[in-house]
Length: 54
Image (cartoon, rainbow, N blue to C red; front, side, top):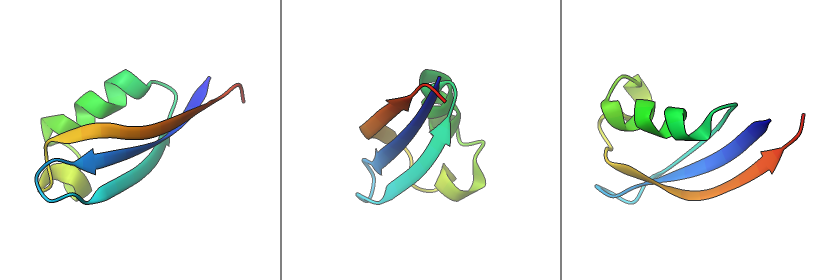
């Protein structure tokens, strides 16, 4: 299963778009600070997602 998702920064209201097979784990990675692009905009909340079988 695959997900496309939009995260919204609670710090500055910017958005980040991405895709993953494990949505919960990916959100944790973004909020941990280990993703260079999103590190300065944490914390993030899930704004929207869609689920796909393939």
